Length: 269
View 1 (cartoon, rainbow, N blue to C red):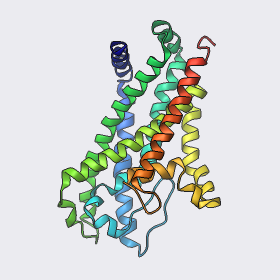
View 2: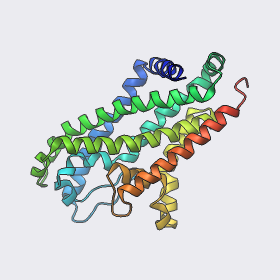
View 3: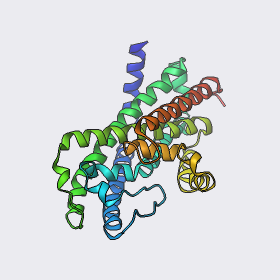
């Protein structure tokens, strides 16, 4: 069984190693990392109070940027932006199997469907790890350059850089995996990348903002807020441990739904 899973993961990695797909995912991630750092320092440097959060973005304070963790603050600030990008590519890769009819061949070759879906998740987690690494590298290059033109003292960034980068990588990676699982689950249910991507973007831009406005206490436990707190290592409303536990719960529920639907659905339709 282990050999079957390993072979299935290798197959998934080969099939997802398409130049356009990889360049698109990595390119959008780098663009988001550059954009958030440029905007974040301009906004925070000129604001007297904590700037208002934008769609998918939560700005840190000047004091938070001045801490050693400020080096990777951009990763947490734009966690939802990175998350929607990850959700979109997980959904696109998953739904493509249905849209091209490849899923019928895969099920015929490997009737144990849970292995197929598990191997896809593992392969996409590996790709997400690579994308997270690229995001951290982009942040490491851009953040010091942008910070140099601001009035914020970032001398503390030189303290224990490897540990700061490792912590930033782990927090963002965990958040992106959950976002990706959301995309995969919706794509399995809807068999459409367009629906999954639209649902993800619409949720971040509209739905969660409306819910937070109506019930602020409930909003702190919603997926977007939870995963932003997770990527930031915890925030004022949600501790890191609570965010990690909620993220794990969201992941298990989403995988469970995807496995049940994938196992019971008639693939021949």
